[in-house]
Length: 276
Image (cartoon, rainbow, N blue to C red; front, top):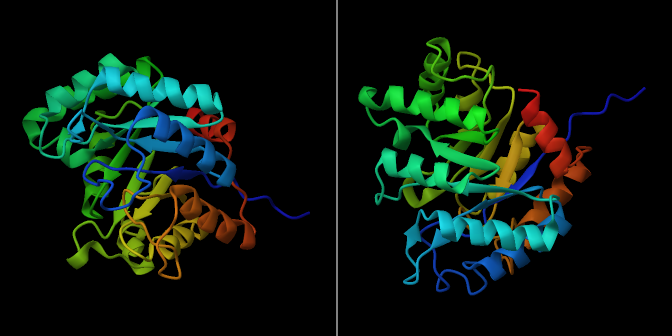
């Protein structure tokens, strides 16, 4: 009997906090645009959407009302077939206390948390641990963003010290964020999964630059989940400009299916998180 690999979740990160329509004319910013993008990317194979919201001037903002508007719009478009993950990213505008406050007010299904932002000093550790316990009590799934391989050691230390209330917590390895030109290569993943680094039961990878598809496909083959989208890259594997986020999702989805991997739907992804 052929052993069926556990399914690979595809997340789409369609807008980020810095890009504008100048960067790509179809960049989705408001609730209607993001709802349409969610539907298109669901059809292309994604089960999770990572969203940023903007203020009236187009600037990145952490705002519970704006998040709820987007979550409601996506829900009307795709129901529970797409998980909405909001960002807590500060982009230099918010302190950890403010980041935490907006998530508590929003109460999303899932949230991404940059370790270096939420715990910039030892003095922030207690508040971070309390916030994670609150997330657990509210059944909100965090994904810890790790920009450098050594941050895996830091997160592992927090586990050992009891600051992280789960046996395992989903993590995202970011490739190329601090390289010249923000370019990444599949080999950039190796330091994160080196034998000397901690092991995570549920890890995903995203990658800056035109080799996004190659990087995340390599990650999937090594047991990870994947994230693609305009936030990190707007080029197809052949170098052409993608017409939409869905086109990026479709390209990676085709890669996974062609390599014998199966895509996770939202129900399967929720179940995987619950088992951590």
